[in-house]
Length: 365
Image (cartoon, rainbow, N blue to C red; front, top):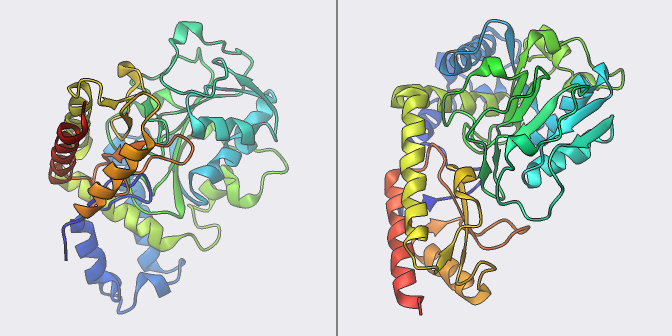
C-alpha cells in the first residue's frame, strides 16, 4: 500500500499505532469475546472505558476537580446550541468574539436563544485577532465565547483572553490536546473529536460545576450538561466507538510524551510550512497575521494574495500524484490548506515542503 500523506482538516489523520490497536481489538474488545460495537453501554466493560477516558483527559490537561468531563453526541456544532441553552439564562445575553467561520456559526446559533453581542467588528475577511484592548465586552454577559482555532481561516489564539470575571467558553475542536492550557481560566472548553483527538460523532466538553443547573427550560435533555453529568455521559446510548477511538488517541498522546511534546511538534511542523511560504519570494501567500497563525491549519494561496486558480489546481493535482492528499482549501475561502494535527508526522510534512519548494521553483516567474 502506498504511503499516504493525509493533511485533511477533519475527519483527520489518526496515528498508525492507534489503527493497529483498533484492528486488534475490533472483534474482541478487552477480552470480552465480542466487539465494542455490539457491547451494551451499561456493561461493566463500557463503564470502565468511560471512566478510564475521563481520567486520561483529566490527567493530560490537569483538569481541576470542580470540572465535569462529558462525552456528548453531535460534535462541535451540537455544542453551538448547547452553550447558550445551558448558559445564557443568567442574563439573557452573551458575548461572541468572531474570528472566523466557526465562531460566526456559533454566534448565529446562539441568537436563537438570547441576545448576542459581537465583541469585535463584523468582517468577511478573517486574517487575525484584534487586540483585546479594542474588544467591546459586556460586563452583563452570561459568558464570552471564542473559537480557540479557526479550522477554515487558520486563525489561532496564542493567549487566553481576560474576560473580567465573565465565564470564558472556548470551542477548541481543532486544537484540543495540541498544547497545555490552564483549564481553571475557562468556564467551558468543548470540541468535536474528529480533527485532533479522534473521529466524528462525539464532542468532549469540560465544564465548571458552578455553571451547571442553569439550562433554559427548552434545552433538550440530550444537550443538557447537568443531566449528562448526573448520568456520567450515559443518559442514552452514547457514540461508544467514537469515544473509544478518542480514548485510544489520548493514550497515544500520553505515550508520545504528553502535551509538551505535542506542542513542540506542532511548532516545528507548522514552522516548516510557514518557512517555505515566507521564503518563496511572494509565490506563496499566507493570509493570516503572523501573531495569529494557526499551528494546526495552514491556509495559503499561490501566485497572488487572491490566488491563481489554474496554478492552485495544478498544485493539487501534482500533490495527489505524490499521495499528498486533502490539501484543497475550504470551499468558503479556496486556495490550499495543510492541517498539521498531532497525528501528522514529520515525514508527512517533509514530503509536503519538498513538493512546495519544487513546485515554486518550476512555476515562479
